[in-house]
Amino acid sequence: MRFTLMVAMRLYDRFVEPAPHASLNQSAFGAGHSEFRMLRAKSRPDIWLALRPARLSDGDALQTYVRGLSPQSRYNRFLGAANELPASELARALAANGRDALTLLLISTAAGRETLVGEARVALSCAERAGEFGMSIADDWRRLGVGSAVLEEIERKAAADGIELLFGDVLRTNEEMIGLARRRGFRLGPGFEARLARIEKRLDDAAPDLPCRKWSEIAGGAELGTG
Image (cartoon, rainbow, N blue to C red):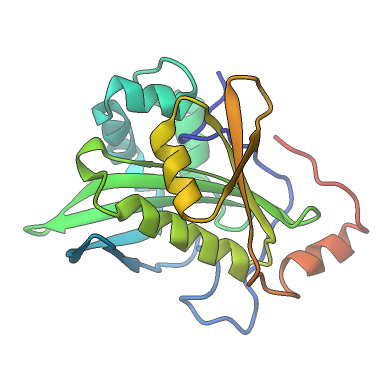
């Protein structure tokens, strides 16, 4: 079964490095970074959440989060029925290198206890200067502007890494994700299957040089393989 977080994912072989001149908050979420990005829900300015890279120790929390999603949310996420992450996909999510593959966790903290309330995965292709993304938000945290804040941050990260096109494939019946994408300026087109639609957006503020252009030059302009 092909894994996705609300949209289909592909993983690429080559790496995207943070621009050397970027500050911590501007660089990619690297595996060695401890960056937390605070996000505020647009419709609830009193709600602040932390977005951070997944750690190897997050496996139980991530699996618990997935199991806690409603059946429909899991269906949207996997593009089919599933109760939890397959072991191989859980390992892949936790092993994301923070360069060409990013796994981000959205964390709520109350009384000193962290609760996972959302997640996102992004795969970058330097040669194509494109990024494919997926995201999910816990059912109880929807319609608060949280999803919009996460997607905005994904766009910011992708643009900082020189990505010009951000896209994903989503079930045509997933009206909530399609509506969110449209509100963020994404366009709707045909997906790679008839039951899917592609949401895509050109990032006008994409960094013009590093890192993707550097990797494209090293690759001699060759196409990147997908996994």
